[in-house]
Image (tube, rainbow, N blue to C red; front, side):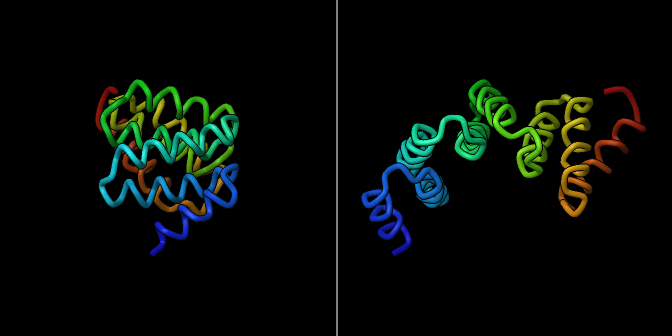
Length: 137
């Protein structure tokens, strides 16, 4: 039922990027990857200079294993909103998964500065610091 309502909302207001993001997320969770990508790309087309469609594409491509596209969209999102804690956390986690502990620590620290209550970022930062104390990057 939610999908039907989201699709209807995109018909009524196709310029609403957030609706496209929500639809893309729903389709992504359902495993409809091609349709999810199309919806998220629609969000991007509606708001290419906003952080959230860029972040959503980065997350989608990261999840699908396309690291090159993920980096491109993470960087675009960070240019649009360099102080968005969820974005800083996501990019830090991405960098850590890519093996770049030093850069990951930088973004995780910034996420914690921007939002001291972001517990996931604080926990991951602690783990990164402990990794650094254990040996070279």
